[in-house]
Amino acid sequence: MLAETICCAVSAAGLAAAAATAYRRRFLAATRVAAYALVPLGLVLTGAVEWLAGTAFSPVAWAGFGLLGAAWLLLAGARAVERRRGRRIPGAERPDPPAVGTARPAPAAGRSRTDGRAPADDFGEIEAILKKHGI
Image 1 (cartoon, rainbow, N blue to C red):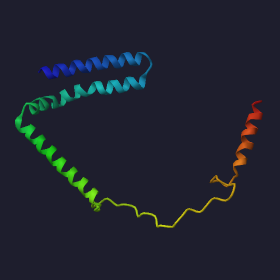
Image 2 (image 1 turned 90 degrees about the horizontal axis):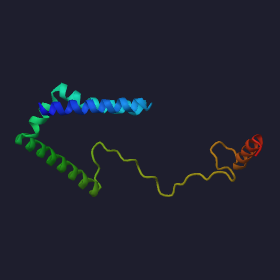
Image 3 (image 1 turned 180 degrees about the vertical axis):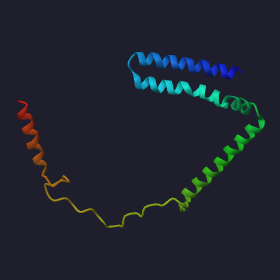
């Protein structure tokens, strides 16, 4: 009962903060604050708070969380060892390395752009814009 009261008070305070933010014409931020403020109220209405309170004080639940953590550590450790040894991990495709001695074709002299224009053409455009504005 206490947890539900606290969640409702947090939601009410959050909605008040959202209203104050909206009053300052920061509607996007107010929407975000309102969304976060409605989460505790939603948890109360779905019964998740009661479940969470029952789980937090259950030794069986904590043993289950410990086993899940141990399983995660074992999987992460096995993956790290596989990576260190250089074995391929099933489902993880690696691209083939480029062949030795292959190089990109060099661009034509004075043509460093991909559209084929010389870099000097850019300065002409810039000069035209500056002249247009009287600079």
